[in-house]
Length: 536
View 1 (cartoon, rainbow, N blue to C red):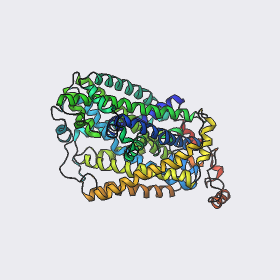
View 2: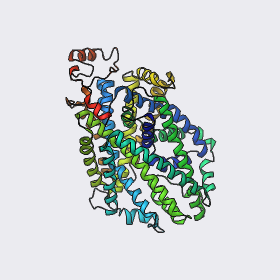
View 3: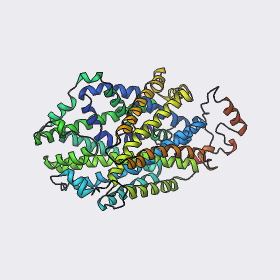
View 4: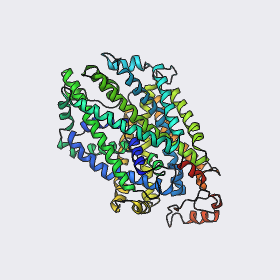
């Protein structure tokens, strides 16, 4: 259980503010109309991002469990959706940690600008030692392996301490440090020569782009990926809230804080890119990049050339480490909470049994000479066909399948300062499925026709398409495994499942004859297991 709403908000912001806020948003905004992009971005935030946050909060807070348990309590047929979300978190956790390890090493490299004058060659050559062969190899790179082990050690230790002593305290320390470091970074970047040229490129609006549908899709995609919605994190975190908590107030704070940080990142990044362009005698468009290229190639180049570049590098890569850690902690917490709920384990046992195998898989696959291509494919497919697909299925199930939105809206309004009207249901059941469906179909057709990044078909098939299909199958199988008699499913939840009067009439009658809405004996409800998890 969170000690208070403030701690929950810090932890939720920590989960939402991750690597993508720093290295993805600035370039997406620049490529999609600059200052004009703010309009569709805000529309997407208000019509999809924050409404989806409210949906996750409502499910987690009402049904008091990890995604599988909360979904099961919502509707007996929805448990597989929860396990699908857990599987996505598992895949993301495995590769996300290695990027934090890279950032940690570059934090150290910043003191000596170890990359020299060729940042690109240093990153792929001397640092990662990327193999020319696209396959799965086990030639380990010590400079990546050692920090990756340290990252997992820190994450598992924090999670083993529990919600209050571990996650909450880490958020209280990491989030203020992240904000302070990034503010100093932005201020320093603004005083670089050429900084205002970069800001001019970033903010100059191209109003003609507003008529382009791809700009609006990009805005919804950015909001969707940056808020940690729809894949179990916010369901899990909100399940630790007290019964009487202002859900909408918390959601607005988290949503706008996340977007505020993205805007701050855009200012800092493009101020630095403006300096890089001025130093190279080229336009900002020639140096503007996103993702790994921005973090580990463009920024090291800037650091090597900028006055007080050491400080700039320490602040930038330190920010990446803190942003990454808070996000990784929230991702792994979803898996631990699900295992605790399913098997009735205590916190330390669940954290070790879940954390150590994930860490070993991560350490086996990614700090190798072939790890970069594997990371690239896995990240692209788990986002495009994992998170987007499960979100689409979830919102369709909540709206059209189980008709759950009215009851969830009532639950939110019962304790919240800002009341939700029917427009919230329209946004969740109408706007969001259309946008997610468009994104999914567009990405699907592009991948099928063009492949991915020129990589071999077998490699993309196994680690891309194969992984996506496996997630669905495993989620279904996990939903069919009986819950342990020590599990949280045997607790008496004060809220009944949301059953459709006609579609679920037969199931409801059968459940009652078996002894309860969940299909489990009411006499087994004790409250002890989830109490241990929530108060850990």
